[in-house]
Image (cartoon, rainbow, N blue to C red; front, side, top):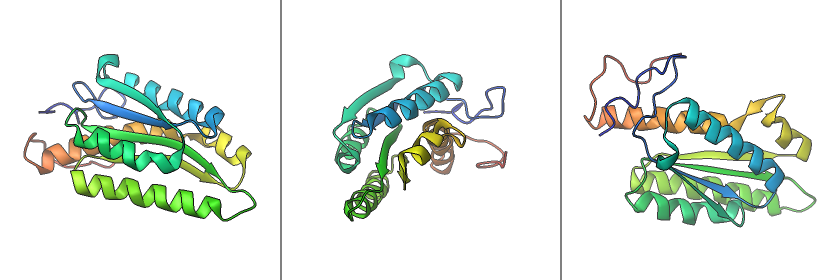
Amino acid sequence: MHADAGAADGDGGPDGEGVRVAVLAARFNGAVVERLLEGCTAALHRHRVRDADVRVAWVPGAFELPLSAKAAAASGGFDAVVCLGAVIRGETSHFDYVAGECARGLQDVALETGVPVLFGVLTTDTASQAMDRAGGAHGNKGWDAAVAALEMVKVLDELRGRAVTPELGAKG
């Protein structure tokens, strides 16, 4: 199905030609998430995923990402789901519940559906730390999540016998 999804694209990264990706973005902490989304879509474009093969949907917050990820993964229309959000610690324990349940829920979706569900959700102590990871001093974790999604599509296709290559997930 994705025989070339793992071929090098010129910079050694995964080739996303023919890969269909749902990108789910949380509106809460929107300024941070918009930057994550910019990095994510730039990475998909750089790795040859066609615009027509990318569907972006906005959800209210990180807590809503697992349900929407399950809908996308179960639809059969996507090879990977990238979830983007930012949960920034505040003065209450709300952070712990939202971040933990979001992570657990997204992992459950991946394990239940067999579709790669990538955790591009920042969990930081401050807004400044979040911005540093959304295109600032620590790169763009949206970009990283997109590339990881393409790598997982390749690895799972190879493990499922859909593509034949000499080695799985070569170190880069």
